[in-house]
Amino acid sequence: GPLPKGNNVSWRGNSGMRDGFSDDAYRKSLVGGYYDAGDAIKFNFPQSYALTLLSWSVIEYSAKYEAAGELNHIKELIKWGTDYLLKTFNSSADTIDVIAAQ
Image 1 (cartoon, helix red, strand yellow):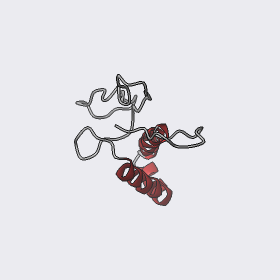
Image 2 (tube, one colour):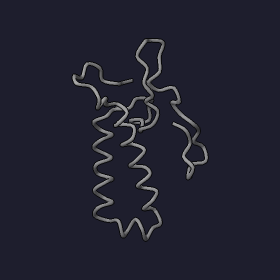
Image 3 (tube, one colour):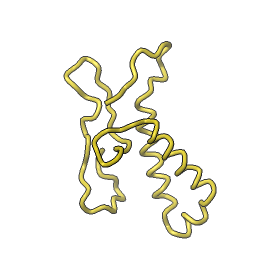
Image 4 (cartoon, helix red, strand yellow):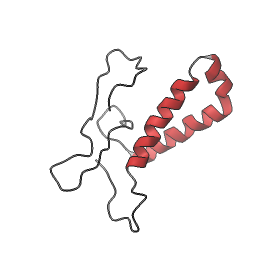
């Protein structure tokens, strides 16, 4: 996705700005989330597991994150990933007939 405002990785640029868009009739923005293993694939199960562990670490060690000045940063990282996961699910559907994937 687009570079975050607090980007601290100087060599990173915008990435995957057209994720989820194709020439087919089905189009849904899947910008966001995290790539897996240094490639250009986003796997939801490993991503959701990693986000769960990050979330639990904030619950258990929020004072440590705060002392390091990283509490807001880790919350932004978790939100970025969970916002992506929510994009892949259509909560308004009565029946799930399409799973957004790339």
